[in-house]
Amino acid sequence: MTKTASSLACIALAAAALLGTAVSASAQEQVVNLYSARHYQTDEALYSNFTKTTGIKVNRVDADDAGILARLKAEGAASPADVILLVDAARLWKGDIDGLFKPIKSPVLEAAIPAKLRARESAEGTTWFGFSTRARVVVYDKLKVKKADVDTYEELADPKNKGLLCTRSGAHPYNLSLFGAVTEHLGEAKAETWLKGLVANMARDPKGGDSDQIKAVASGECGIALTNTYYLARIMRSSTPEDKAVADRVGVVFPNQETWGTHVNIAGAAVAKNAKNTANAVKFMEYLASASAQEYFANGNNEWPAVPKLKVSNPALQAMTGSAGGSFKSETIPISAVGKNQIKVQQMLDRVGYK
Ligand code: FE
Image (cartoon, rainbow, N blue to C red):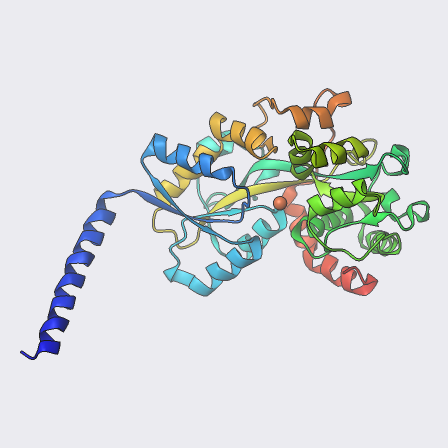
């Protein structure tokens, strides 16, 4: 044997030995492979708690909603993904119609999660479940805007609010879902007129995330903005002087309390179509509906639990909804309805020039 050949043989032996270890380890070790779009650092505790109680290791891949769906499509049957965690109802809807999820039957989840916060049930089961909710609310500059002028989504497009409105990109899933809901409530023609009015009322071109809009309201650059509740709660719970100043300056409104209710979006999960660890995936989803995980959503990331029986004890969320006794009227359309309006909404945004 030449020197090269013998060292190659050594490498091959070593590789075989390594492979043997890996195979025997994976035969014993219980895992669940998670593709997650939740971008909240505090989620680490959520996952480690699951491992602590079940012994199932969570392997996590982080990407945004669109990135995860594209990756699942590209990987096809070879995908290692078991559970998909997304932060928007319309994306869950899209993953579902693209056939990326595996329907499951879980009496635990069916009992815990209200029907309006999950996919429609078929004979094979249900594809996705919402685990936490967040409202898309209006924040305004208390120094220059009256609450009564911004307490409906419709009024944001009224000429009286010209030059005041700031939002993140119209094409961001949080806005696409809100606009999809508005389209469901008002019909297509009125929704397009409304979007045109929003564009006419902009203080600046859309840029940044929701937190940036809140800060721009506090700095006086914008008078009105749209945000998910947890971004505002994070600022309200912060102890830095900058955040305290922001929290003092901005008011919050849960829009449309007298009409169809405030738009609510979800973070939710599904079992991947080609999951290899289906039983562990279902266990993980059932864990997300447990009291401890639901409590985490309320306090770790300032969201509302999807399980209606569980009480929230989050000071910022309570302060936000204070006068209403810690609750507010949310829209009653099934969350899956916003998904089917996505393509229409995107076309409307292009027509009205919403960046
Ligand atoms: Fe977010």
